[in-house]
Image (cartoon, rainbow, N blue to C red):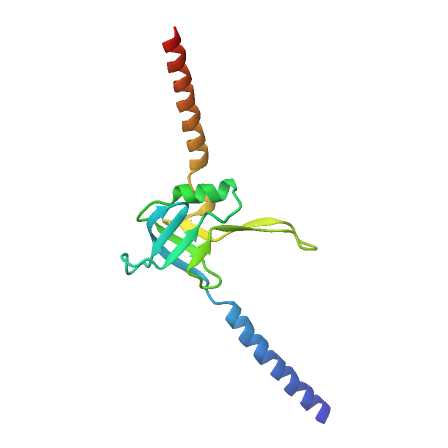
Length: 151
């Protein structure tokens, strides 16, 4: 009889800290900010309720350059509302990071920006392609003008 009682008590004492730990891990790490400005591949954010006070920085300088990260940066403009993850509550947030493979998992990119003006990062317009296309057209026009001057 004592054994079953002690087992119930120990099971309960083990479940309480486990429950408390799981509640802590469920805390929402998402924040919302308004783009105050973009300087040197860094996006400065203000709180939603105080657009004069810069409180966060999303840094695009220290990231692995990939198409999605570049597109996120190009889609951010002054006044936009950005929803982003801030797991550590830091003032400076990395825009993205690369996680190398651990045994049994695959390598992948993690993006801290969730959405811009309510549009999920995967649904943003492809401004990387547009920028590349515009650069190609500009180069073609320069080539045409140079050839025309020669003749």
